[in-house]
Amino acid sequence: MLEGKALIEDTDMPVKMQMQAMAFASQALDLYDVFDCRSIAAHIKKEFDKRYGCGWQCVVGSNFGCFFTHSKGTFIYFTLETLSFLIFKGASTSSP
Image (cartoon, rainbow, N blue to C red):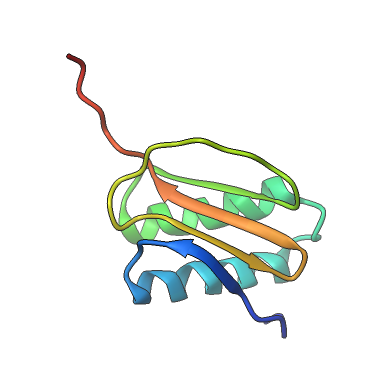
């Protein structure tokens, strides 16, 4: 595991799920090169899909913008080492 400490910027996830998100991120950084953000994100997304059901999204990088709608209790944004991590489960919307 990496020695770096994650810094949570924003979240509405339960604490146990937050800890799991940071553990999966640390695990992914041990498995993949820090510049391989796509593989890191894919690893975290697949782990969340396995543990919490399908529909999770993950964005990893050092510079990105985003705008999204998420299901309540499924959002976290944190930094670890030099990367930022955004994990959320998309909200279902109903058409008018």
